[in-house]
Amino acid sequence: MIDKWVTIATFEYAADLQIFKIKLESEGITVFVKDENTINSDPLISNAIGGAKVQVFQEDKERALEIYDSIRAYAIGDDGLPITCPNCKAQKSETYYARKSIFYKLFPFFEKRKYKCLNCKMITNP
Image (cartoon, rainbow, N blue to C red; front, side, top):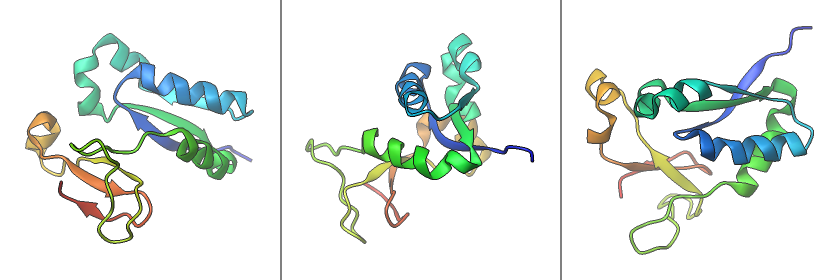
């Protein structure tokens, strides 16, 4: 049987992903990090390639996601409080960029920030 890797999370900076990687490895989950050396050599292209990806084996996916949900930082609004989803009222949102056009892929800093609820998957504007 061939083991299949699945991406659990992406990170803009390699330092951020190391915390998650070490936590997964301490729980006995095998981890592969994709594009880490690329963003370490040139951090400005992190957005262009979608950041560094943390991958685990398919059979470890659910356990890895539970660990990630327990340690991840959720989006905080300008008032210092967690962003609340208008649909399901959960406070588990993260910053979301669609990057659908070639312009936003080349210049991601021009795209307006949105939030994606991790509970119901609704995307909202701040």
